[in-house]
Length: 311
Image 1 (tube, rainbow, N blue to C red):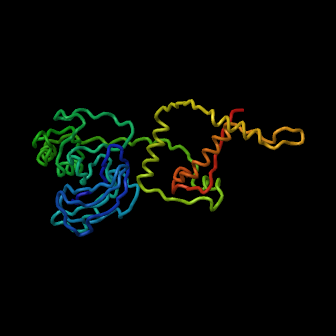
Image 2: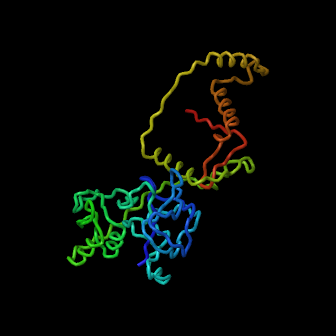
Protein backbone atom coordinates (compact mmCIF):
# COMPACT_ATOMS: atom_id res chain seq x y z
CA UNK A 1 0.00 0.00 0.00
CA UNK A 2 1.37 3.50 -0.80
CA UNK A 3 2.92 5.44 2.07
CA UNK A 4 0.98 8.56 3.00
CA UNK A 5 2.90 11.79 3.63
CA UNK A 6 0.88 14.05 5.91
CA UNK A 7 1.24 17.71 6.82
CA UNK A 8 3.48 17.63 9.93
CA UNK A 9 3.04 19.68 13.10
CA UNK A 10 6.38 21.49 13.29
CA UNK A 11 5.59 23.44 16.49
CA UNK A 12 3.34 22.83 19.51
CA UNK A 13 0.90 25.58 18.46
CA UNK A 14 0.80 24.79 14.74
CA UNK A 15 -2.65 24.00 13.39
CA UNK A 16 -1.99 24.75 9.72
CA UNK A 17 0.85 25.98 7.54
CA UNK A 18 1.88 26.99 4.06
CA UNK A 19 3.51 24.44 1.78
CA UNK A 20 6.11 26.88 0.49
CA UNK A 21 8.12 24.62 -1.83
CA UNK A 22 8.48 21.04 -3.03
CA UNK A 23 12.03 19.68 -3.37
CA UNK A 24 10.74 16.61 -5.22
CA UNK A 25 8.43 15.96 -8.13
CA UNK A 26 6.24 13.03 -9.12
CA UNK A 27 8.40 10.10 -10.20
CA UNK A 28 11.41 11.03 -8.05
CA UNK A 29 12.97 8.36 -5.84
CA UNK A 30 13.50 9.42 -2.21
CA UNK A 31 15.24 7.77 0.70
CA UNK A 32 15.00 8.30 4.44
CA UNK A 33 16.49 11.69 5.37
CA UNK A 34 15.96 13.37 1.99
CA UNK A 35 14.54 16.91 2.17
CA UNK A 36 11.23 16.78 0.34
CA UNK A 37 9.53 20.11 1.11
CA UNK A 38 9.67 23.46 2.87
CA UNK A 39 6.83 24.33 5.25
CA UNK A 40 6.14 27.87 6.46
CA UNK A 41 5.01 27.81 10.09
CA UNK A 42 4.06 30.52 12.58
CA UNK A 43 7.76 30.83 13.46
CA UNK A 44 9.83 30.25 10.35
CA UNK A 45 10.20 28.33 7.11
CA UNK A 46 11.47 24.82 7.88
CA UNK A 47 12.75 21.93 5.77
CA UNK A 48 10.90 18.63 6.08
CA UNK A 49 12.63 15.28 5.65
CA UNK A 50 11.18 11.97 4.49
CA UNK A 51 11.18 9.10 6.96
CA UNK A 52 10.27 6.38 4.47
CA UNK A 53 11.72 5.56 1.07
CA UNK A 54 10.00 5.02 -2.25
CA UNK A 55 8.94 6.78 -5.43
CA UNK A 56 6.84 9.95 -5.28
CA UNK A 57 3.53 8.76 -6.68
CA UNK A 58 1.49 11.95 -6.42
CA UNK A 59 1.68 15.44 -4.90
CA UNK A 60 -1.76 16.34 -3.57
CA UNK A 61 -0.92 19.92 -2.49
CA UNK A 62 0.64 22.47 -4.84
CA UNK A 63 3.52 24.78 -3.94
CA UNK A 64 2.40 28.00 -2.26
CA UNK A 65 -0.83 26.53 -0.88
CA UNK A 66 -1.78 28.30 2.36
CA UNK A 67 -3.68 27.04 5.40
CA UNK A 68 -2.89 23.35 4.89
CA UNK A 69 -4.21 21.63 8.02
CA UNK A 70 -1.93 19.47 10.16
CA UNK A 71 -2.32 15.76 9.23
CA UNK A 72 -3.79 16.63 5.81
CA UNK A 73 -2.59 14.35 3.01
CA UNK A 74 0.02 16.18 0.92
CA UNK A 75 1.70 13.35 -1.04
CA UNK A 76 2.14 9.57 -1.34
CA UNK A 77 5.17 7.34 -1.86
CA UNK A 78 4.92 4.14 -3.89
CA UNK A 79 6.73 1.14 -2.51
CA UNK A 80 8.74 -1.26 -4.64
CA UNK A 81 6.52 -3.08 -7.11
CA UNK A 82 3.62 -0.60 -6.85
CA UNK A 83 2.39 1.48 -9.77
CA UNK A 84 0.20 4.58 -10.10
CA UNK A 85 -3.00 2.51 -9.89
CA UNK A 86 -2.30 1.92 -6.19
CA UNK A 87 -2.86 5.62 -5.50
CA UNK A 88 -6.60 5.20 -6.06
CA UNK A 89 -6.80 3.20 -2.81
CA UNK A 90 -5.35 6.08 -0.77
CA UNK A 91 -8.02 8.00 1.21
CA UNK A 92 -8.05 11.69 0.36
CA UNK A 93 -8.51 12.78 3.99
CA UNK A 94 -5.94 11.71 6.56
CA UNK A 95 -7.09 10.21 9.84
CA UNK A 96 -6.70 12.66 12.77
CA UNK A 97 -4.74 10.16 14.84
CA UNK A 98 -2.28 9.29 12.08
CA UNK A 99 1.27 10.56 12.41
CA UNK A 100 2.98 12.22 9.46
CA UNK A 101 5.61 10.24 7.56
CA UNK A 102 7.55 13.48 7.19
CA UNK A 103 8.99 15.39 10.11
CA UNK A 104 11.13 18.39 10.94
CA UNK A 105 14.86 17.71 11.42
CA UNK A 106 14.71 18.52 15.11
CA UNK A 107 11.53 16.50 15.84
CA UNK A 108 11.77 12.85 16.88
CA UNK A 109 9.99 10.99 14.07
CA UNK A 110 8.88 8.15 16.30
CA UNK A 111 6.88 10.24 18.76
CA UNK A 112 3.14 10.71 18.39
CA UNK A 113 2.20 14.13 17.03
CA UNK A 114 -0.53 15.78 19.17
CA UNK A 115 -3.61 16.43 17.09
CA UNK A 116 -4.92 20.03 17.32
CA UNK A 117 -8.27 19.22 18.96
CA UNK A 118 -9.83 20.84 21.99
CA UNK A 119 -10.33 19.28 25.42
CA UNK A 120 -8.96 15.84 24.54
CA UNK A 121 -8.73 13.48 27.55
CA UNK A 122 -5.25 12.63 28.82
CA UNK A 123 -4.07 9.26 27.42
CA UNK A 124 -3.68 6.39 29.84
CA UNK A 125 -0.22 4.86 30.33
CA UNK A 126 0.54 2.42 27.52
CA UNK A 127 1.75 -1.12 27.94
CA UNK A 128 5.35 0.08 28.27
CA UNK A 129 4.57 2.61 31.00
CA UNK A 130 5.35 5.57 28.70
CA UNK A 131 2.17 7.55 29.45
CA UNK A 132 0.99 9.37 26.31
CA UNK A 133 4.31 8.86 24.47
CA UNK A 134 4.17 6.01 21.96
CA UNK A 135 7.40 4.79 20.36
CA UNK A 136 6.89 2.87 17.13
CA UNK A 137 8.53 2.48 13.75
CA UNK A 138 6.83 4.13 10.74
CA UNK A 139 6.03 0.67 9.31
CA UNK A 140 4.46 -0.43 12.60
CA UNK A 141 2.35 2.72 12.72
CA UNK A 142 1.12 2.13 9.18
CA UNK A 143 0.24 -1.50 9.89
CA UNK A 144 -1.52 -0.53 13.14
CA UNK A 145 -3.57 2.07 11.27
CA UNK A 146 -4.53 -0.42 8.57
CA UNK A 147 -5.64 -2.97 11.20
CA UNK A 148 -7.31 -0.45 13.50
CA UNK A 149 -5.06 -1.10 16.51
CA UNK A 150 -4.48 1.31 19.38
CA UNK A 151 -0.69 1.50 19.75
CA UNK A 152 -0.94 2.45 23.43
CA UNK A 153 -2.40 -1.01 24.15
CA UNK A 154 0.56 -2.86 22.61
CA UNK A 155 3.90 -3.84 24.11
CA UNK A 156 6.99 -3.19 22.04
CA UNK A 157 9.78 -5.71 21.61
CA UNK A 158 12.20 -3.35 19.86
CA UNK A 159 14.96 -1.24 21.41
CA UNK A 160 13.76 0.69 24.51
CA UNK A 161 10.29 -0.82 24.15
CA UNK A 162 9.74 0.48 20.61
CA UNK A 163 6.81 -1.13 18.77
CA UNK A 164 7.99 -2.81 15.55
CA UNK A 165 6.44 -4.83 12.73
CA UNK A 166 6.55 -8.19 14.57
CA UNK A 167 4.55 -6.69 17.46
CA UNK A 168 1.73 -5.75 15.07
CA UNK A 169 1.83 -9.22 13.49
CA UNK A 170 1.60 -10.76 16.97
CA UNK A 171 -1.36 -8.51 17.81
CA UNK A 172 -3.13 -9.66 14.65
CA UNK A 173 -2.49 -13.31 15.55
CA UNK A 174 -3.58 -12.84 19.19
CA UNK A 175 -6.72 -10.92 18.29
CA UNK A 176 -5.99 -7.73 20.24
CA UNK A 177 -9.15 -5.53 20.51
CA UNK A 178 -9.38 -2.81 17.90
CA UNK A 179 -9.17 0.89 18.78
CA UNK A 180 -12.45 2.72 19.33
CA UNK A 181 -13.37 5.34 16.76
CA UNK A 182 -12.53 8.85 18.07
CA UNK A 183 -15.50 11.06 18.90
CA UNK A 184 -15.93 14.10 16.72
CA UNK A 185 -14.88 17.31 18.44
CA UNK A 186 -17.54 19.99 18.78
CA UNK A 187 -16.78 23.00 16.57
CA UNK A 188 -15.55 26.02 18.50
CA UNK A 189 -17.77 29.12 18.29
CA UNK A 190 -16.39 31.65 15.84
CA UNK A 191 -16.86 35.32 16.79
CA UNK A 192 -18.29 37.49 14.03
CA UNK A 193 -15.95 40.19 12.75
CA UNK A 194 -16.43 43.01 10.28
CA UNK A 195 -15.72 41.99 6.68
CA UNK A 196 -13.03 43.65 4.59
CA UNK A 197 -15.74 45.46 2.63
CA UNK A 198 -17.37 46.80 5.80
CA UNK A 199 -14.03 48.17 6.99
CA UNK A 200 -13.03 49.68 3.65
CA UNK A 201 -16.22 51.75 3.29
CA UNK A 202 -15.25 53.71 6.40
CA UNK A 203 -12.37 55.36 4.53
CA UNK A 204 -12.28 57.62 1.50
CA UNK A 205 -11.40 55.73 -1.71
CA UNK A 206 -7.82 56.48 -2.77
CA UNK A 207 -6.79 57.57 0.74
CA UNK A 208 -5.11 54.27 1.56
CA UNK A 209 -2.88 51.57 0.08
CA UNK A 210 -3.63 47.85 0.57
CA UNK A 211 -0.53 45.92 1.69
CA UNK A 212 -1.18 42.11 1.50
CA UNK A 213 -0.30 39.99 4.56
CA UNK A 214 2.32 37.26 4.49
CA UNK A 215 1.70 33.95 6.24
CA UNK A 216 3.62 34.88 9.39
CA UNK A 217 1.73 38.17 9.81
CA UNK A 218 -1.60 36.30 9.72
CA UNK A 219 -0.43 33.86 12.39
CA UNK A 220 0.81 36.70 14.62
CA UNK A 221 -2.55 38.47 14.30
CA UNK A 222 -4.42 35.28 15.18
CA UNK A 223 -2.26 34.68 18.26
CA UNK A 224 -2.74 38.28 19.45
CA UNK A 225 -6.49 38.04 19.01
CA UNK A 226 -6.57 34.73 20.89
CA UNK A 227 -4.49 36.28 23.69
CA UNK A 228 -6.83 39.27 23.96
CA UNK A 229 -9.92 37.05 24.12
CA UNK A 230 -8.65 34.35 26.50
CA UNK A 231 -6.12 36.02 28.84
CA UNK A 232 -7.14 38.69 31.39
CA UNK A 233 -5.52 42.06 30.68
CA UNK A 234 -4.72 44.89 33.06
CA UNK A 235 -3.76 48.46 32.28
CA UNK A 236 -1.25 50.86 33.82
CA UNK A 237 -1.40 54.65 34.15
CA UNK A 238 1.46 57.12 34.11
CA UNK A 239 1.60 60.63 35.51
CA UNK A 240 3.31 63.21 33.27
CA UNK A 241 4.56 66.69 34.09
CA UNK A 242 2.90 69.06 31.60
CA UNK A 243 4.10 72.43 32.87
CA UNK A 244 5.48 73.51 29.46
CA UNK A 245 2.37 72.29 27.64
CA UNK A 246 0.08 74.12 30.06
CA UNK A 247 2.09 77.33 29.63
CA UNK A 248 1.81 77.06 25.83
CA UNK A 249 -1.91 76.32 26.14
CA UNK A 250 -2.42 79.50 28.21
CA UNK A 251 -0.54 81.64 25.65
CA UNK A 252 -2.52 80.26 22.69
CA UNK A 253 -5.84 80.73 24.50
CA UNK A 254 -4.91 84.37 25.20
CA UNK A 255 -4.36 84.89 21.46
CA UNK A 256 -7.69 83.36 20.50
CA UNK A 257 -9.92 85.76 18.50
CA UNK A 258 -12.94 87.20 20.32
CA UNK A 259 -16.57 87.26 19.22
CA UNK A 260 -18.88 90.26 19.38
CA UNK A 261 -19.36 89.78 23.14
CA UNK A 262 -15.60 89.67 23.73
CA UNK A 263 -15.59 85.96 24.46
CA UNK A 264 -12.89 83.66 22.94
CA UNK A 265 -14.05 81.88 19.77
CA UNK A 266 -12.32 78.69 21.00
CA UNK A 267 -10.57 77.40 24.07
CA UNK A 268 -7.85 74.79 23.69
CA UNK A 269 -7.82 71.83 26.10
CA UNK A 270 -5.03 69.41 27.02
CA UNK A 271 -6.87 66.78 24.96
CA UNK A 272 -6.45 68.96 21.86
CA UNK A 273 -2.66 68.80 22.24
CA UNK A 274 -2.70 65.04 22.82
CA UNK A 275 -4.84 64.47 19.72
CA UNK A 276 -2.57 66.65 17.59
CA UNK A 277 0.51 64.80 18.89
CA UNK A 278 -1.11 61.44 18.00
CA UNK A 279 -1.99 62.67 14.51
CA UNK A 280 1.56 63.89 13.90
CA UNK A 281 3.02 60.62 15.24
CA UNK A 282 0.88 58.65 12.76
CA UNK A 283 2.27 60.76 9.92
CA UNK A 284 5.86 60.33 11.10
CA UNK A 285 5.43 56.54 11.56
CA UNK A 286 3.30 55.40 8.59
CA UNK A 287 3.63 51.73 9.54
CA UNK A 288 1.49 52.51 12.61
CA UNK A 289 -1.10 54.41 10.55
CA UNK A 290 -2.86 51.29 9.29
CA UNK A 291 -6.13 49.38 9.60
CA UNK A 292 -6.25 45.57 9.69
CA UNK A 293 -8.38 43.57 7.27
CA UNK A 294 -8.20 39.85 6.51
CA UNK A 295 -6.82 40.42 3.00
CA UNK A 296 -4.29 43.13 3.83
CA UNK A 297 -3.48 46.23 5.87
CA UNK A 298 -4.90 49.56 4.74
CA UNK A 299 -2.01 52.02 4.90
CA UNK A 300 -3.59 55.46 5.26
CA UNK A 301 -2.40 58.75 3.80
CA UNK A 302 -4.28 60.79 6.42
CA UNK A 303 -4.42 60.69 10.22
CA UNK A 304 -7.86 59.87 11.62
CA UNK A 305 -7.99 60.02 15.42
CA UNK A 306 -11.18 59.04 17.23
CA UNK A 307 -11.89 60.21 20.78
CA UNK A 308 -14.31 58.56 23.22
CA UNK A 309 -15.66 60.74 26.04
CA UNK A 310 -17.93 60.15 28.99
CA UNK A 311 -21.38 61.78 29.02
